[in-house]
Structure formats: structure tokens, C-alpha cells
Length: 92
Image (cartoon, rainbow, N blue to C red):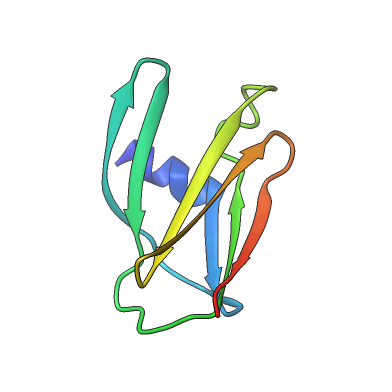
């Protein structure tokens, strides 16, 4: 629960400009990396997704977060390096 509470404060998502609620699916640790799996339920469609992700930026100056978004089988990915914490993907 503590991990999800932290993630909820430092990872925010908007679909077509509207904030959504994240559901924690799980996580796994791989050496120094921790892979967190989250989903947004009951989404029928969206064209844009805006993500603010500053996980661990306050404690790790060189923190890098990788974001993968999958919509209808189409995957888009991007790295966010501290202090760059915002990204936007558009789907046609």
C-alpha cells in the first residue's frame, strides 16, 4: 500500500485532458530496476494521454523513468530523465 500511495502522488495521468484513477497491478524488481504495472480501468477510447511522472526525482538526481503506453495494441514509449517529468502521446 505504501508503494502505491507514493506512486499515486508522483504519477498522474490524463486522458483527453481528464484525470484518471490508477489501479495497481503489481511490480517486480530486476537488479537496480523496479518495474511497476498500473492500469486504468473502464476506458473505452482516447486520443491523447498526458503523463506527469517524477517518481524518485527528489532523491535521485540522475533518475530515469521509462513509460510504456499501449492502446488497442499500439505501443508508445519514452524515457523521462530528471527533471523532465511530462510527456504527451497522441493516437490517431
